Structures are given as structure tokens and as C-alpha cells.
Image 1 (cartoon, helix red, strand yellow):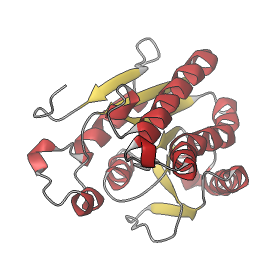
Image 2 (tube, helix red, strand yellow):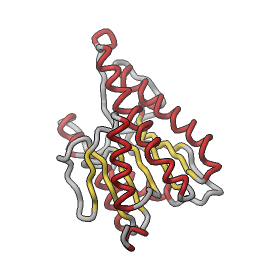
Image 3 (cartoon, helix red, strand yellow):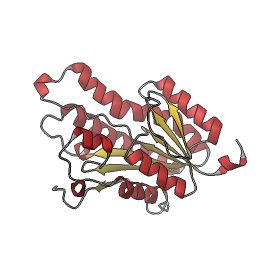
Length: 232
């Protein structure tokens, strides 16, 4: 590592437009290196962001990506898991491969990324792990069986990791994003989307920044974020 690598490092597992770019921008402004992991190399990067390509559902690929990042920058100070795959549909029409894909995309990717990153983070004295949840983390809506079951599992993973590792200096936080993030991807999926009814990625990124800098005497395990127009 060169001298510049002594700056703290943010790794975004599931880097992409919207929240991924907002997180990168906020942490770059705060003096961090930023590395993003995406399943394909088509993700648009900001100046200063190093992109690594890996399918995080593959444990060997996840480990390879984290080892490459560590060789370039050292171990992460902050790891954000931001992978999400909205698999939904009428329950009697959902196929088993679709149900499994929801779990692999939303949960197995987190398991693999954490197993690859945590040894280095613990060795450096800890850090912050943030797992991005959703409305479905708390409430299984009709036709959301694949997505909700996976997001429930992600929430359970966060709770278990917090209880196992916080004594070793690892702050684990699960953020319930109760609403749709305003992004090009969301607008393509929901053409009638209204901006004031959405979560602004820059505002969410600011909350993640604050979570990563909480004093150890007052760590947050879970919080929920929603636009003021969201009913709950």
C-alpha cells in the first residue's frame, strides 16, 4: 500500500446508481477511499471510486474481490451491503428458482461479503458494517413472499452479527429503507414515480455517514428511514 492508502476505506458491496453513488460521494468528501463491488462492469463510477467486478453470491468471487481490495487499500473501515433484488409475484405463480434467487441475491451476498471482509476489519480493531434493509424487512406484504422472506433473513443476520462482534469493535447497523429510493432504476421500474414520495439517496447517504461515526457508547443497531409522505 502507498501512503495514500492509510486513509480509511469504504467498501460498497452492491455498487450502482442511486444510493451507491451517493454513498461514494459522501465518503469521498469525508476523506475516505471508496471501493465498489458490482456484478458487472457496467456500473457508472465517480472519480475516485475503484470498481471491482464480482458475483457476491459466489463465495470464491466475494473473497477474491475483498482480497484484491485489501491489496490495494487495506481492510475496510466501513462495509455497506447494498445488494437488493426485488423478486415478487403471486405466491402460487412464484417458482422455486425465483424464491431461491431472492435469498441468494439479498442474503447470501451479505453472508459472503461479511465472511470475506470481517477478519481484516477485526484485525484492524473493528469498524462499521451497514446492511440495507427495506419495508419488507419488517412486514411481508401480499405477493412479496420471496423478497420479504429474504429481507427478514438479512435483518436476522444483522442482529446475530451485532451480538457476536460488537464486543470486538464492530458496529453493525441494519437500516430499514421504508420507501422507494429516487434513482434512474426506480424511475424505469415505476414510470409514475413522484420524487417527493421517495427517499433521496443523498439524504440516506448522510445517515449512513453518521452511523459510521457514532461513538461506541451509543451505537444504533436498527433505524428506519422514510419520506414524510410515506404511510406506516
